[in-house]
Image 1 (tube, rainbow, N blue to C red):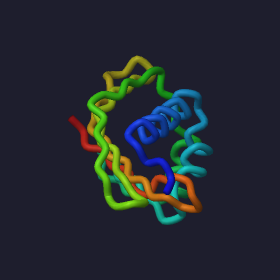
Image 2: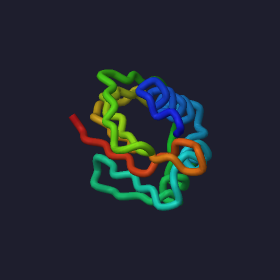
Image 3: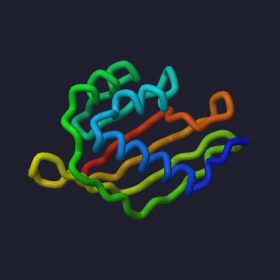
Amino acid sequence: MTNLSLDRLVTLEHEGWEALCEGRGGAFYGALMTPGALMVLVDGSVLDRDAVVASLDEAPPWDSYELHDERRVGLGEDAAALVYRARAVRDGAAPFVALMTSTYVVVDGEPRLALYQQTTL
């Protein structure tokens, strides 16, 4: 069984946010997401993996981010969700603050993102 511990899931989320801050989110999430994965965003958009990659390739990088209140929800032996609060800032705009849920499944022995959802606060 692949490690889907709280620490591992939080590390994956930090790696994703760092990729977004460095302008390489498309490549990162293209590799992390399962082929059928979806992202549900606060504006009501539902994006598949290809749409996520394309949108992140065009998105300006985040300047900074913070994660808080991380909680793991077990979903069986090979799946788990991470729920957390995020605050991110870009281009001097008002902070983006939301609750996030990232659901991971094990594919070929590695954790992969299957579903991500944002809920604005």
